[in-house]
Length: 344
Image 1: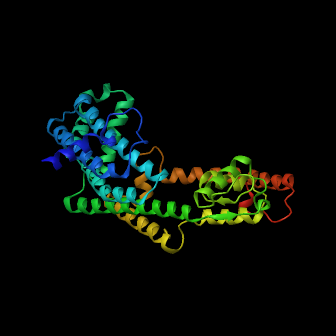
Image 2: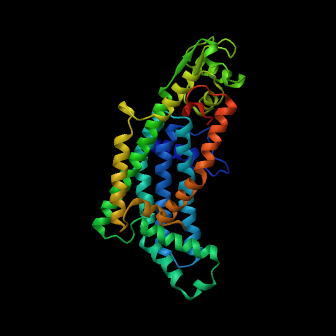
Image 3: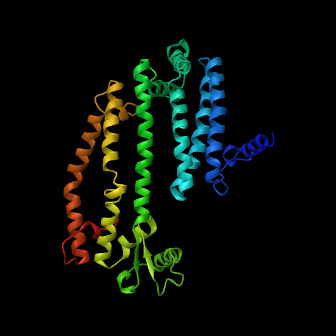
């Protein structure tokens, strides 16, 4: 009994389950993720059960309770995901990886709910449809379209296949992001000669020295170094925009654009598998390709998007070339123009 009470107390004090105006990033830890997400999903599943039993084709009995369910999960999962992006740890990764399939399963249940789908269809087909505001009509139409794209109309065997694809796409997307993050962390270049980083502003030198201190170079200072160059955005942009050392710019530029493209962190097979699964998903939904699936909820079409891109390309090409040539002249560039020499 004492153990059970302790678990309940921990759940009640879990920051992910508290009411808040602003995300409590300062107190959320990896240990909160598993129990917090699972307790939240249990509560939301109960709310969804109740909604499906009592749903009516009206705003108070359909749209508002559904929005509360989806928004609550979106906000809490957003906290966890953001922490992973800015304060990544092995413990946090493991916790997210464990509960992520449960989160996807719940969202698929919401998206494939026949009672909710039928209620939205009933609103659209009711005599009151014409009296709805354009905004509300758009909400209803979007919900119906998204339900179809979530597989609500699929036969049982195809829906099962669809759900497996969605779970795998989520897993692959998660792994892709982890590889990029790990590849970003992996690049480190220690510089001891200040001439190699001439041009960097004092704030950037200070940041590079702080990074060096965190990596074990306790005596590093902004004035005397050593300085640790990384691919983290503040350091990356500082080097590309201000460093006079051409070789350093090229090294950092190449390291940045080739992240997660080789070795254990190579995302190439992951990308190929994502493309394959997206095509399978599109075909299950009776689309020719995933681009059409993506455009289904947008005002544009694939053809219109490609047409716009070509218009932009043809209209801007000559002006862009002229602008580059003017920059070459104004900067008195003596060597060939390279990507690492263009300001980011």
